[in-house]
Length: 216
Ligand code: G3P
Image (cartoon, rainbow, N blue to C red; front, side, top):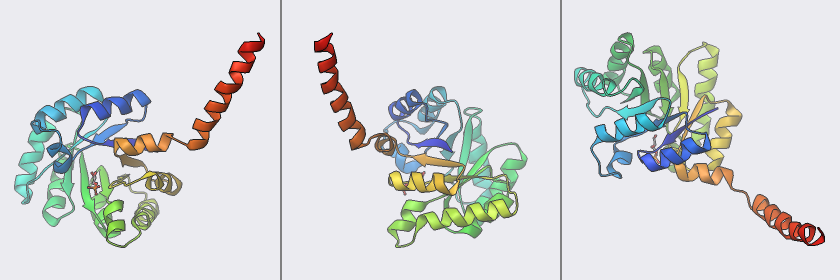
């Protein structure tokens, strides 16, 4: 399973790169707003830091505007993938952009049929939002199971990026289901590594090592 880092923070992405878990980056306007820097500056910095796709979100609503905006975003760097919301205009834009060789990631997906139609439009990636479905009283990971089953049924090349990840269980469930990619906030990456038994084991080994040193 590949890991994208769900962050517009260059520092967080650098830390993830050092851990060897940054196969790409996803951003969105909310994440950009936290950085207090022009979006294009952030995109260029992120493309220097990570060897992999950097997802930049188009905010236009009408298909022709999405297409025009996406072409500009794509021109920033060869690794830019354009995030486009799962709407009718969005899929029209995806169909056109992918035919031009511009990779897209259809985002804000909350149903298996949105994912299927995005794949039919030629999207390179789809982002189903599991955390927001959980927040609304659904079981977000069931959507991932459904989408993966449909994509396997029809051998669809579009890659599923599990998004809106709230914690470690989303990541482990995504891996058990066999999702292609999970996009994870950096703080969740750190939680994935930590285990109290590991910490306790280190303390025991250090204490016992003192005995070894004392006897040598
Ligand atoms: O990549 C999408 C993700 O950033 C959305 O997460 O927590 O706003 O639902 P959240």
